[in-house]
Image 1: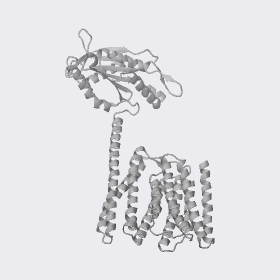
Image 2: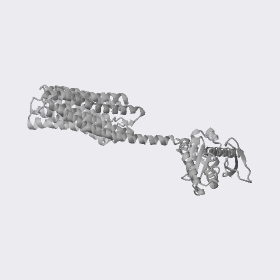
Image 3: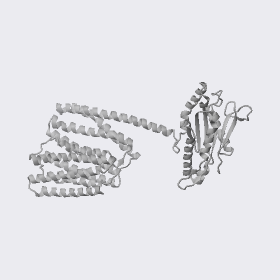
Image 4: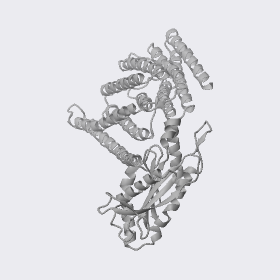
Length: 547
């Protein structure tokens, strides 16, 4: 609230200063008093606008702070130029000479203001946009500075020419105004609410100031201007409009960047590339232009080469950032493609990508005679019992929460070396690596207990439901004496058959399938192997529940 009151006070001061300026220029006789009133009130109007934007900068954060500070920097440069005018008018009592170095401040003051707009303050960029957009922004600002040095400074120092200096200065100043108004027009259409009002007000201020700056500058060039003339009233009065614009900017906050805003980043990058590509064209034109003095031609070529070197350095940095961004994006995409979005577990794609390596490791362990306690690969297929009842009775949202909790409990019941995969729907797969098949039923028992021992909370209602699961498991290799005889795919199918048997046996149990041993009842599994498989089963009951 204090900030808003300060901005309102500055706006009132700007109105009062404009009135004093008008009275002084129209009522006072031409002389020192009139010059003093014009110079000092103009400086105070600039200071008022500077303070307004600076206050907004110090009370904002993030990209908004940079926007306001860049506007304030532009006003500080404008005020510095005015200080030079005051020095000549009030202290040296002399007319400011043409092609003065301070003229650069007038032109360059627009650069940080335009830079602030190119930051697009009404949008909060993503981290990626901020990283890459900053370099495009730097390229554009370097290109704009290059144009001033090449086309204006050239006629100021290297090959002095009043006409060439005035002509190019006016063209670039007018171009700067056109660019600012164009950017503001685009942003006005893109924004809404208070942002639209702010951009509209700033557009009016830029156009009003630009028109009267051009008129005043032409009067200077035609030797029709003197300090305190009527030209000062509308030109200096435009600074008061900027102060009111700062008042409109109070409390503005950027909105999150959307996918549609990526076109702006692409446009910025293309514009920056056009600036880079224009440099050799300008250099060739400087070499071939017969009307350009030799000193000016050499100067432009040297400035172009220096700018090209700096831009190449920025492009090198941008290329490195793009490569890092591409690598980071690929990692994210790869992780997303291998991860189930609901539970955060690995998915079947991950299983397909890694199972061959696990199988090869197991086969090597058998061939090399490794410790039998850490060389088996056991597949556990786990299915939530009667899960359709949860969805039908409580809704799919609750069903999703139950699945997420099941995934958490299963993760806590297995070892770090094991892999938990969401196999599909309410079915999970555990790939237990570096294990011993003789202890497989222990992990199956832990899984059954992890699901059944504690009811599942239904959230804010405070209710909870008991759930159970069924497990089917089988070990790879199927025949320890002949590890390659049965593929891991067939063993996984055996685990699925075991899961079906657990379901048919009443659920809430784990069934393991093992190769048939002598003197043990066996079941023939046809159609799974070329000669069929004789198996025996091992059943483990889960905890007693009311389900």
